[in-house]
Image (cartoon, rainbow, N blue to C red; front, side, top):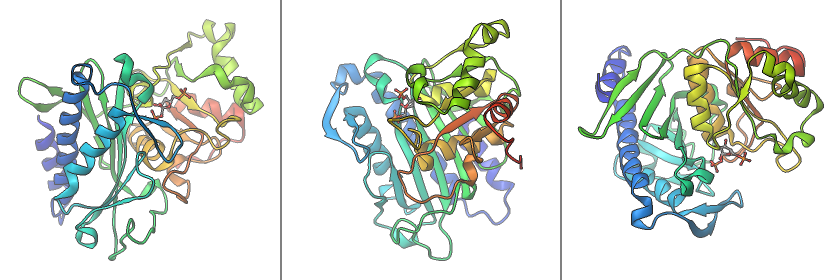
Length: 330
Ligand code: FBP
């Protein structure tokens, strides 16, 4: 089962679908193959290191951030599929020439885990797709989707020892591994289900002193002797995509709470948290800010940040119980 066949079979289950979303997803997979190829040979082609620029977040960008961003933009430039691209590397939504004729808005983090890119560590690409409705130009008019609930598709690509493409269109989650010999993504993770429990937790402990006391208490319950006795162990890869992929396969959690340096959390709602929340929720897991479901957070700004707790339903429920009143589950 190839990815393109899986996408087409998914389309057939939506009578009235015109096939544009299928082509969009297939084009994303094509961009992922190009990026995977370049990542593999970046040290040979001189594409490691800093680009010399900074992005709207004030972060020094890597040459691979720029390459990844341009690869996505070029992949859609002549497709008339997306009216706009919201990217971590673009200050404003990138308006595509086809503008109003296009049906979708693409939100993307081209290179997730950029601190890993020069040390041959795992990195990823994250994407969330919204339908533009009633001539709403979204990107053109600056009108943004209401919340992550409006995503029609989302997913990520993990560039690790193998390249994996994981996506959902609201009908479960499936993962595909790139067979480099034939250049095809093949179904290797059908109907992914996030285990309800899991003993891995991913968090950067450096800012612990700056977290809300309840968050500190919760994390201490995992990291202290009690946590060890209950089998908890820490795994923090430096790439959100890699930590979420492990969590989908083996259970566990990933946290990036608010701290003094990131009072609203570090991670961006539109192209990091909302797409992964859609995927994880479709696989039976949960994603919360600590106060509300990530998918219900009103979208106010394209680079808006939120605190994130994501992963196994049982673990996130425990996080809720320990940090405050349990969120009404949907
Ligand atoms: P980028 O998209 O800029 O890489 O930022 C996201 C991220 O790198 C996540 O992948 C990762 O989990 C986290 O930030 C690491 O942040 P920190 O270095 O503060 O722990």
